[in-house]
Image 1 (cartoon, rainbow, N blue to C red):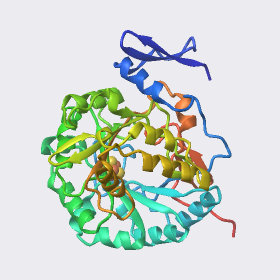
Image 2 (cartoon, protein in one colour; image 1 turned 45 degrees about the vertical axis):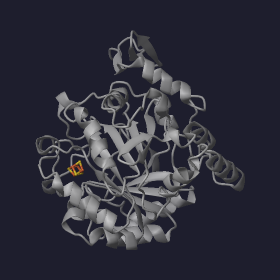
Image 3 (cartoon, rainbow, N blue to C red; image 1 turned 60 degrees about the horizontal axis):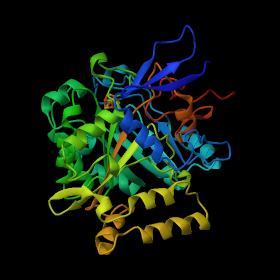
Length: 417
Ligand code: SF4
């Protein structure tokens, strides 16, 4: 393994390996000013790595290889004809139980498409029985087709749903997901709202839908119940992906949303890095993610800074762990964060993000990029809190780029007779 460094060249940031036979420099962004501005916001040193003492707050569990869709953009290479296996309920619980002993609190169910698992409700209720918070990433097909499904999953113990939502344009959806039924996602959202299940939208961003990001925010802002997060996530070059559509940087996504002026008056000054909250399962490198807090006021979105001191809140939450001292600190920051004259508005916004509440005010816009396959930045990976539950135990994983990690095995290991 050779050392590598980041170099600024004009307004580009290049990742350069020092290996004489290594790859050529890799462009990480063409907006160095914004990239460095976000780095400078980090409350901790940029290379603050996880240690073995850190609890394991959040992990992913791949419960099926199968999917009812066959997206041209699929990081897992899944589909209905690929004959994928399902992870048995007992094996899901065994892995989760082991991770719980290491402090695991939150589990994200992934696939393939988790809702095609025939025993999904048993898995969710078993995981809840272990005291874990469980969320799920879905394409929304079954949610749209079965109005009662969201309620059943909530009753089983699901606390949050992440809905894939890439576009409002049928032709774009066809090129990215192989179908053009944009109404389907809207039906899925309606059923989630009826079930009062909190949800977020995840937009896989390619060169094709990049120009649409503003329209997606505007559309989401018009929903009666807001998603708590709209996450713009650059397409991962893994599984199936159309080569020519890859390579969108985090800064390009941010630039697109700011240029669209969907959050009135928002500028780069309103961006924040993701606070490192071990107890909440958040810990990502400042080069990977950025947040814009948007507040719905009447018909429009405005930066939440107009009502809340977000910078103070983010700073106080950074490093927040379980324990009464840090809880007190975070609660104190929360109470001091509303700006003068905006107490009620701020309180309503924050309460809307609490589990089980209906969110009508505050919407987070998240922007994340992945480690380039040509420039795997160890510092980024070491800081990431995400882990994946494998048959042999847990392994660290970059949420946005899984190529370098072992493929999750869905068939449990044989036990000796
Ligand atoms: S991206 Fe998701 S919905 Fe699409 S084929 Fe892959 S697993 Fe299925």
